[in-house]
Length: 125
Image (cartoon, rainbow, N blue to C red; front, top):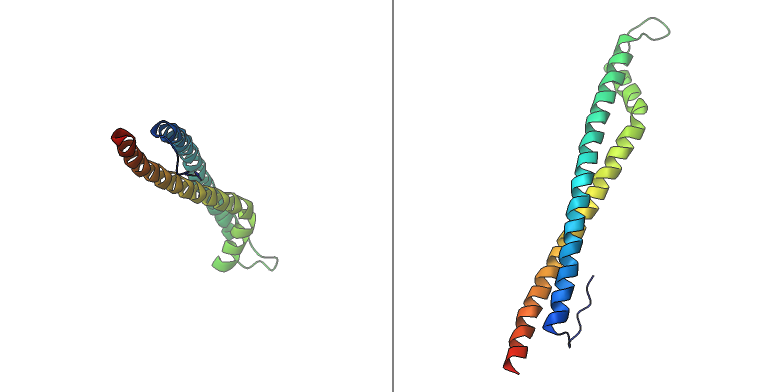
């Protein structure tokens, strides 16, 4: 979060804008990486869930009866719980990065407005 003081010069504001622009670029790269990880985690979760579900459906209970769909779902959910947790964590990280990008973008727009105003002030002097 930027701290704007009343006596900032246009040059100081330009420097702050450069810092924020660099931070924005870093966050974009971070977002790109987390999106890839999130997609990979989603595919891995789906694949492993399907494998576990099919494995459960092809097995039999102790009494020789077939496993129900609900039982197969429960077994698949239990077997893939850690993968689902990882996927949910990555989704949360993505949302946090997106929120950070929105905040940085707002700060950049605020500084641009202040910059325009201060530049006019300094040109009048």
